[in-house]
Image 1 (cartoon, rainbow, N blue to C red):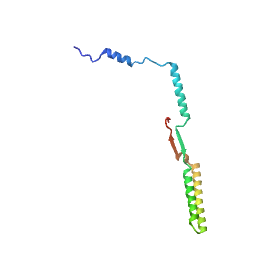
Image 2: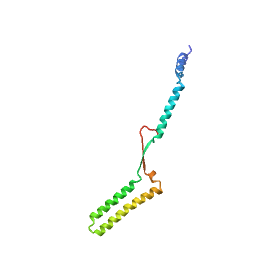
Image 3: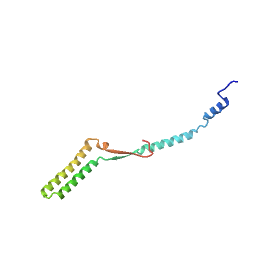
Image 4: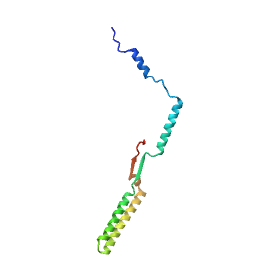
Length: 125
């Protein structure tokens, strides 16, 4: 008796099930492609990330710190000339920080370097 490892009847059934006989109509293909292109266009119109620029944050923190130091100098120092001098120096340093930040923004790409990018959910980047 010969042992046949291939059952031709089962093999034919498997081959018949693997062949794809149902093809979508060209109209359905065109409709699906149009819907896909519209969805891609809508996704590309809308940026995939939220961009939050923090270039002004060092300036604000510097200004707030030196203004609080100036107020503390006015309240804590009893000699009026010395307190006004100290408060003036603190105010000057706060304005110098603002000026340095403005120059830094103009001369460098500081706005791009100090930026937080938050990725949106469900949007392809």
